Image (cartoon, rainbow, N blue to C red; front, side):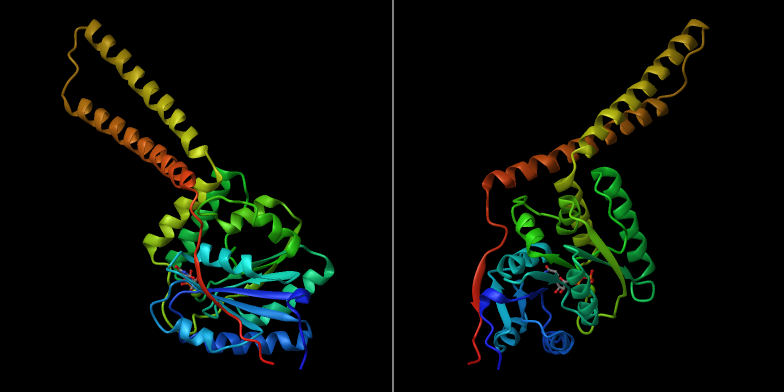
Length: 314
Ligand code: UDP
Ligand code: MG
């Protein structure tokens, strides 16, 4: 058997798992099948993101090249991924989902591009046949908003299925932002990248761990972690609404001058409610940033590792 030492691992494959007990075996099998022909030394890092099912028990049965990292509780997909990335020793690091939606058969192409010299190999998901119309539309709207608000341009169909060179990973791990949005961060770092398309598979087992509420939070968090433009929008909303109010005052004065009374309280109430609406939105946005600062000041770690299993099969 080959005696890989930890120091000369070429490929790390990092996968966050949250209640994926029935996906662990097929995932590891398929990855190994796809990596063996490449004849490279590798490790598979499975991060159990506080699962309440048997995911960890499944993971811990495996030995090297599989390495299990158990987080103390559910820290969320991005943080679990970060935990796995921090543990990886490879020259090239691939991150992917654990539900087989990111096909392990693409690993070969990712590695090929890395060997050609690319430091970042992104993937582009064509999921017209697996994702719902709603999910595709909201995801594409999100990326448009994100690009507009953050000046970091990202194409729809981007996910955390990608390969990073260890040079890029080193820089990525220097970013200490809470709730770091990894996709945006990699783009923001700016290393030259290449994108390869793939057809997304169906989830092998279980259900999506990203319900709408989590998706919305994720969208909000990632924009706020990258941009202060939403705060500036307040200024423009203020200018716009006060311009409207100003026009209305002129209109009222004019009506009074020509001897007409301006009819009704409905318009007044309407305008006041509108302005209050705008005000509350802006307060909410400011509050979100304040919350960010608050959390950042606490300087808490982004994940807590409870246990690492890496049995050597000697
Ligand atoms: N995941 C995680 N922690 C979470 C939510 C999800 O580690 O809190 C993992 C999940 O197990 C999967 C990957 O993140 O491996 C992507 O999640 P999912 O497939 O549910 O997202 P979707 O494909 O539906 O967007
Ligand atoms: Mg999935």
